[in-house]
Image (cartoon, rainbow, N blue to C red; front, side, top):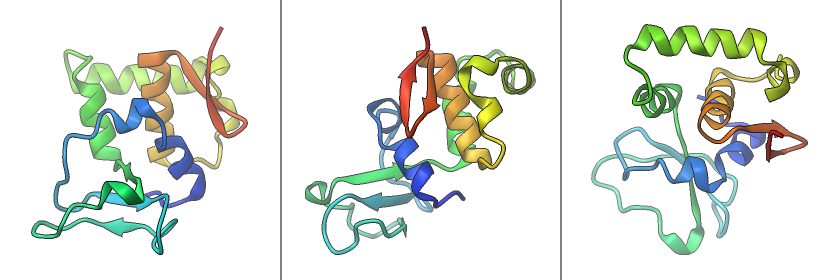
Length: 129
């Protein structure tokens, strides 16, 4: 699971946070405010949900990102083939600058590219023209 500041910044956007469906056992998150700001937490069943006043940021795992994307494809194989084509061919979206990125970063970037035509550049999502 990617716990880097870069991944946290990538996930701290309405497009990714809008995919959040409620806390499930094993969900990762951090908070923007309070004593735990910047600390990575793992939510467990039976715990209270993170208070909204701390502005929690859900950090999706790779499997969760893939489940979100899968809805747009007929088969998992079709999704994987599209991911491969985008990663290896579509240079404008920024994958050529992501050599040290985690799998979570690649899948979030793929989702943002396919769904919103946005690329991760200079520490923020930018609409591709």
